[in-house]
Image 1: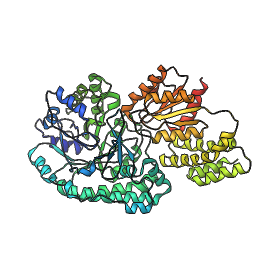
Image 2: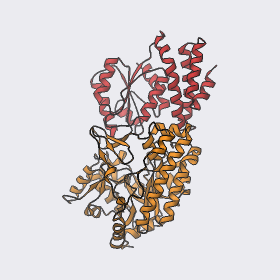
Image 3: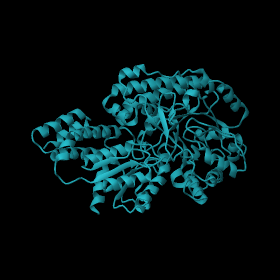
Image 4: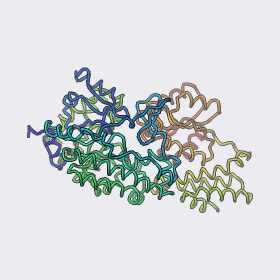
Length: 383
Length: 208
């Protein structure tokens, strides 16, 4: 099987069979990407010199230099929607205002934008009805993406992922950003009518946008990326009862719609201790789960593999806080070996960093992660 | 015994009912301290259910908000009462981190536990914690961090507070923070969640 293309390799792994080696990923945009600084440093270490790039509205690398992906032998390429100017407006005083009216601020010493102003914070039902939703069919976002996807599908050997649109978040997460987390959680408990109305409106937007998006690229991609955080490091945000009553139906609606428009598999990202929800997520159509953080309660890779390995492919797994940021290359190697041992058997594992790679991570560790993935991830795995 | 009813109203997140009950109790001549004790007992039970995974964030948040409403009623009376002065806690999310939910929850729990809270908000520079603690004579500084990347800033903040030589206990918490990390950076206390924070701060103070 020496001559598998990346796309074949990924297809086999996603079918829960063993290809020639564990596929590896470093994504653009949301959750799987890298900040500019470590991107540049890694490029330098690889001897690539000046590299091309584009940044997402949140300052994460959103388009890589092709040479960078080739040097690391990344198995995936991505297509995504175009940005519009309304996605990022910097106000005097430094606040970033997005198309939803959410205000984002960057902390003084950090690289991250955090949502701090919520357009529906004090909104009543009336205000919600008056809220000016952006147009999900805004043609500017879809311009040229079919051609791009078609080109990548026909002219490259890589597996293709439809990125999560950069201007939006999962249905729940978006409700949280628009309302404020505390207020929205209080709504879910005490003001269900408002909570449900907001979630429904957001789901309407998502279904229309993904519909149009996949009309363009659905036939070319192998994976559609979605996300919605459902837990803290300790527990799910909600009881199973509340999740099933209020959140799951909206997610289910979106996933069903995606499934109708493409044969691609759905990748779903959620941080947190969500093992109690995995059965529900599988039921509504999730086939690939990111990020697999071993340190989170109930999310130990070996446990997940034993329980869900026949139905879920795991994407991620390499810990940033424990290993990539503070570990030696030797420790990175051990981590990679351990995760492959835990999740690689029988396919169904795509190795990647478990979080977007932050500035303090050394280039040597990034390079070592992918080098080791190829060394230890060759099938048949050594036990 | 009023706390079973406090418990019920608080679990339902019925803030106005908690307010009424507190007002009624004061009207009957019950001391603010005794009403507070009843409310704290109710919140403690709810906090324990949260810690045990029987209830989740929305239920915990509505209870904490109801508690907050009850405290609003009691505050003037508590300020007048000559009881033992509660310890002051300077609270904030460390610099580089703009998350406030966990911190707010901890603040409400601590206030419910009888502490006086000076909340510095989010993205708080290390020196603000120590300056405020010195000016206000606080006994405790409580640091929150939600990002793995701001854990380093938490460490730096603890280091700076120590370097200032303040007679103050430093406690830490937040999603990425572990007991081991708290020990490593020289914090006096660590709580896994908001509900455990009250007991932990009390324990830390009794070590003085």
